[in-house]
Image 1: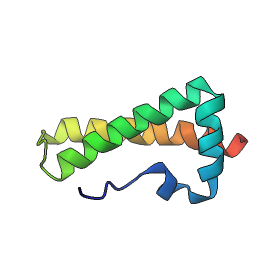
Image 2: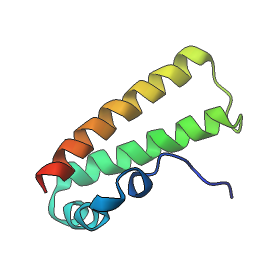
Image 3: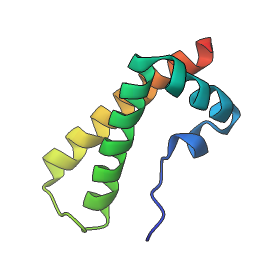
Length: 79
């Protein structure tokens, strides 16, 4: 299995413990967290041609991933 880039634990290593806590304590965070990972994996599959897609769809997935990452970071920074 190949390595999937942009995993949140690698993007924000200083917040790994906070991520684990929020996933269990905050249902909204947990939902966004799972949505981020689903989209991140879809981007990775598109980039590696495991599931080829057109450029417009791939770019839309990247925009969704970035928006989710921004929301998650804001929640992590608040703790």
